Length: 598
Image (cartoon, rainbow, N blue to C red; front, top):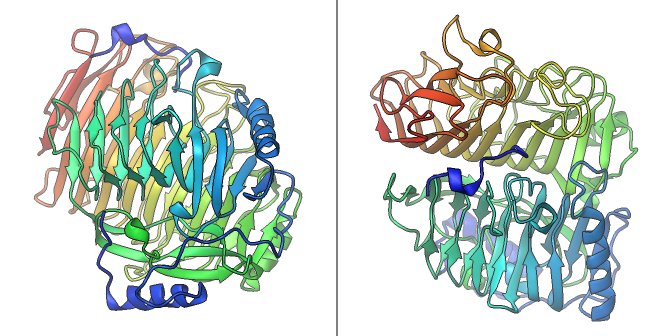
């Protein structure tokens, strides 16, 4: 998002899920490990006294309810002071709460993950607030990136909590006993909620767009600006797109929640790996249910600290270890290579991978069941062909029974310094699930300019039956998204075209207008997407146009729903929304919407 957004004046105004036999067996296994009877949820966990937390480095802060309240609050405040405006700083922090109840005001700054260490969100209760504000930018939350609230419950002292964020700021597995506000008076450009229960009302305010997935909104939802999408959400508002611009899909066809760190009843640290769900509605844990999935001991994980050589990490992966990547900036001289089926790679505190020598940060073989979660892949000064690659080129295996999934995985080219990457994410494997991805060619910070942080393409999908929930892709110089594989599905897409094309020659495609934001290849026979938004704002040259925001072949198996194109400053134009339909969006008509295409 830009530091120079148009002002607001210029803009348009549960119950327990049923489990299959396999899921019940997995839940019973977890329940027995907790010392409860199968089929009956365990009592809330008490904070264990021993053993102590593993050494996860100085960026990890573990709180116990037996600690003095003042000591906990002092640590929270110190972390926030460091991270409040450190948009491109090196600090990475994880604030982890053992099961119990806390009186605390948790103000969440950049590169800060706040998470409970219970098996269920209600095992940790914060009486006070877990919130994200935009005071540092006078209420403008369009740059409130890279932070997370996860796996806890909050009883807000005021009756309402605030999560005024934009991209890369997930609100995941949270039980909020009150209202939730998504803005701070100025504009915000988020966002993502998953596996959460909100007892009160969600008030979107000036929030431009949002995806809520597999959650429950007991108090309902108020507000809409351009693109609000609900997938598998209980008590979601009905589809009314484009007025107001809300789109609801009853169930998510195939989904998996993010792995998370927790402590068991003995005080041992473990990682819970949620199971795959199909035709899913609501959360995995409402009513006190043990979520379906499996538990892995921390001893199965190789703990990666900043300074650990990539060669040593790859040795651990080859030996069968999972990875727990601790908070920090991890410089790599070669890619991390995941080759074993079922491997979990879990980052804490927005752990950041920087490929210094023009390689990928991470690659995954064409295997089943890999989970990648909680990472920021940040391009280095040497040009990388891709920052992350899922499967090798030409991958042919199918993984429908146990797909690879990516959760809260973010990509950045520039902003923290000069950087180069031809592509950010390439998906060659089939059946992959993306769950909250932000791919960003930086438009502000340091090392920013058309020739300074070049990045041609954001996401390229070659695999079949790939599903994306919460796809944010911004400012790439050619295709923001290029989808070549059959059977793709996207639930919510947010995009801004690049701000900085220096002129028509740099932006035009085949001598004409610029490329679309979301391109489905002519060879594709099946594709469906819901809630697509693309915005343009050209700052270096005026009069540039894009022929259509969304491009796809006109076939019976291809369908796009709820699309919007917005000319933010009136200095750019979309001639059409999709195909030859809808539009224009330009200086005269800033917003153009299209219910479906073709």
